[in-house]
Image (cartoon, rainbow, N blue to C red; front, side):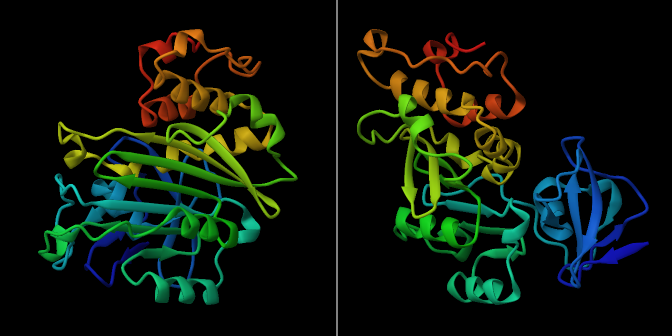
Length: 293
C-alpha cells in the first residue's frame, strides 16, 4: 500500500512504520478523500495531520521516496520579520466543514489547511521581500477564530513573542478557579484569561526582545503538538499550567520575592512532559524553576 503526493511526487510506503525525525511513531488513521490522515502514538484522534504536512514538519524519511518535485529543504534560518500562526481543532464536534475550509482559504490564501488545523508561516524573505509587513493577525481576530472554529493556538513572532492560547467552554472551566493565578492587569507575560460569550480564553505569553538573533533557527512548527495535553489538564481541573503562568509573570517583577504566592495546585506533584514544554516556552528562569517539583 502506498500513496503519492501529487504536489511533489513523493511516494509514501504505508506498509513501513512511520517514524519521524525525533523517533516517534505515527499511524494512518483515516483518509479524507485527498490524502491519508495520520496521528502520533499514543493515538489521540482529535490531533491529526494530513500525511504531507506531517512529513514536511516532522519527517518520515525512512518511509518516503523523494519525487522529482520534492519540496525544497526546510529553511534553517529566517528573517526578523517571520510570523508563525498555528490553530488546532481538538473537540470532535468542531472539525471544520467544507464550507468553513473554503471560507478560511478565501480569508487566508497563504495558510495551509486541513479539517483540524490551520498553519500560516510567513516570512517576507521567502518572497524576496525585505520589509516589515505589520502584524498579520491581531489578538481580536485570533480570539474570533478560536471561538468560531478552533480550540488551541500558537503564535511565534521572530522579534521575541511567543503565545499559547486555549479555548474552553465555560461549562468545563470558568474564570474563578484561575483568578488566584492572575495578576491585576495584563503585564504581557505569563497567564491571562477572559470570558468571551460561552467560552473561556486562556493565554500563556512570553515576550523578550531577541538581541542574539536566536530566533533565526527556531522551529515553532514543532511546539504546539506537545503542549496540547495542557488543555485537557485544565478542563479536568488540573491548574498546574496556571501556576507556571503565574510564576512567569512574577519572575519578571523586581519585587518577586515579596509577592504572596498562590497555593501550588495539589496536582502539581511532578513536571509532566507538557508542563516541561510550557516551562521552556515561557522561558522560566532559575527563580521560577526552584518553585516547581
